[in-house]
Image (tube, rainbow, N blue to C red; front, side, top):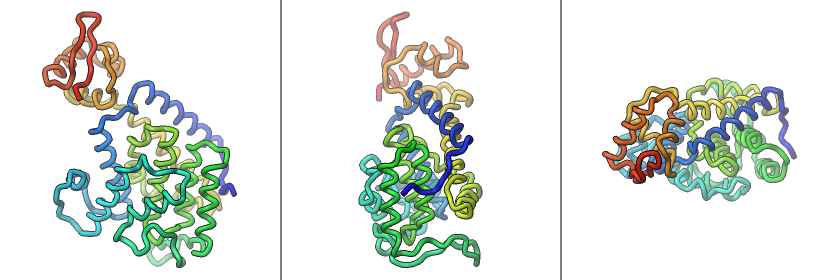
Amino acid sequence: MKPPYEITTNTLRLVSSISEKIGEVNANYIGNASPQLRKQNKIKTIHSSLKIEGNSLSEEQITALVENKKVVGSKKDILEVTNAIKVYDNIKSLKPFSDSSFLNAHKLLMNNLVENSGKYRTQGVGIFKGSEITHLAPPAERVPQLMDDLFKYLKNYDELNLIKSCVFHYEVEFIHPFLDGNGRMGRLWQTVILMQQYPVFENLPFETLINQTQEEYYNALEASDKNGNSTVFIEYMLKVLEKSLINLLNINNITLSSTQRLEHFISLNTNEFTRKDYMNFFKGISSATASRDLANGVEKKYLTKYGDKNKTFYKSSF
C-alpha cells in the first residue's frame, strides 16, 4: 500500500532543483570525498542526529571517540556516539529495501541503550510535549505489518527515490516501530535510501540542517500528522536536501586561505588535474594565485607535479 501523500508543484520544483545540483556536484567531482572529508562529515552527521535527541557531546568529543581516545561525559551519551560510529562506519553494507538490515542497524545503534534493541516494540507509545500528547503511535500489534507494507512501497512502488526517502523517514516517525531510536533510524535510513542512487549523500551531512531547524522539523511532522499525509514533511525534507547541496556547492563563495583552498580541492578531487581545472573550480582566483597555491602544494608534498609548461599536471600525493 502506498502511504498517503501528494506531489505538489513545490515538490516537483524542489526535486528538479536537487537533481540539477546533484549533476553539478558530480560534474565538479565534489562527490569524490577523501577519507579525511568522509570522516569529518560522519562526525557532523553523528553530532547533529544525536544532538536532536538530546546528546550533549561536542564535535570535538565525537572526533576523539572516532580516534579511539578517552572522553569525559555521561556514559549514555558516550555509548550513543560509539554505537552510531559503528553504524556509520558500515553504512555501505546496509540494504535499503531489507527490513532485517533495518532491524540489525537499530540493534547496533541502540545496543545497551534500550531493551530488545533490533526488535519492533510490543507495547503502545505516545509522543508528549510537556504533559500534552502530540502523537499516539499505531498499536504495537500493527507495527510488523505496517513496516512490511512500508518496505514493499520502498522496493516496489514506482516513485522517485528522493520522494521515497522522505516518505520513509516520515512513516518511521509516524509508526514509531521501536520504543526508542525512531528519529535517528528515520534519518539514518533516509541516507541509506538516497545513497543507493546518489553516492554524494554518503558525504552530505544534511542532519546538520535538521538540527539547525529543529522547530520546523517537528512542526512539519505535526502538520503531516494532522493532515493525515506526509506532504508537508516531504517538502520540508526536500528543502533541507536542496540547502545541503547549495552549501556544498557554495564553497567557492567562501573566502579561503591558500592552504584551505588546496586542502579542500585535494579532498574532493583525486584525479589528475591542471592549473586550468583548479581555476575552473575556484572561479574567483587569478592565474598567479592558482600557480602559488599549486607550488605551495608541491612544496608541502600534498601534490606531485608532472610535465612542464603547458603540459603540466598534478596528482594528489594522498
